Amino acid sequence: MARATRVAVLASGSGSNLQAILDRVATGQLAVKPVVVISDVPEARALRRAQSAGIANQVIAPDDYATRSDWNAALATALSLADVDLVILAGFMRIVSPVLLQLFAGRVLNIHPSLLPRYRGLNTYERVLAAGDPFHGSSVHYVTEELDGGPVIAQVRVRIGDHESIASLAGRVQAAEHWLYPTVVSWFAAGRLAMRGDSAWLDERRLASPILFSESGEALPDSDPASFPDT
Ligand code: GRF
Image 1 (cartoon, helix red, strand yellow):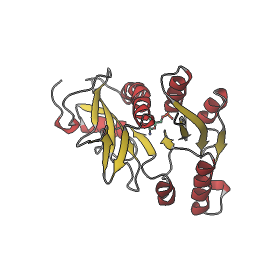
Image 2 (cartoon, helix red, strand yellow):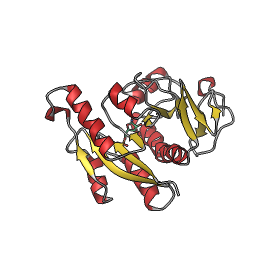
Image 3 (cartoon, protein in one colour):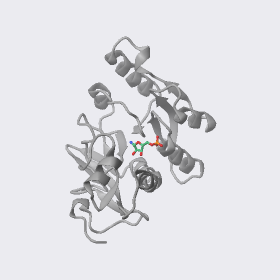
């Protein structure tokens, strides 16, 4: 039998996406083996979540290293020593180095709270509300050297209400992230997912556009979020 997919989760903050993954592993809904949680922030709640789940956890903070390249090397070494098959970025607020991306080519995922390629970078909720867009959402994508720019695998699309606040929108998007990310991780673990060139592939099919889900978790036939159909 093939070994369980060994995953590392990198998180800088609250770690609610980490928790969603750990919960599904604990209930047998997600067949991966979380082997280590790494944070760049010593007080990150994500580390305490890992402790509670009995998973190895480690602080690798840039301040503890003479140079950024030393920090990057420490991170790559920790992941290599843990013998991980998949690196999951979940609210990790640092850019990972090209060296690490080469070491784990096609094996690093991130979740970003927007319908990429819209709203790369920070403060996506503020920006989408200011722009008056009808939809927001979240994207799970492969990590490449381009910030929030790697091939997108799946997205959840959330309709923005008339009286939506940053907090309400963030709450809805994050609730959806908590099933979206484990779903994509399960595809990876089942060997259904690959990155080839600039594209994500699912079940040996190149994804011309990401797999798109509604807020309630239904796969939407129209998979072009930019078209914003009136659904
Ligand atoms: C998530 O909303 C994710 O989209 C973004 O950072 C947030 C992390 O939240 N990259 P948490 O730490 O998983 O609670």
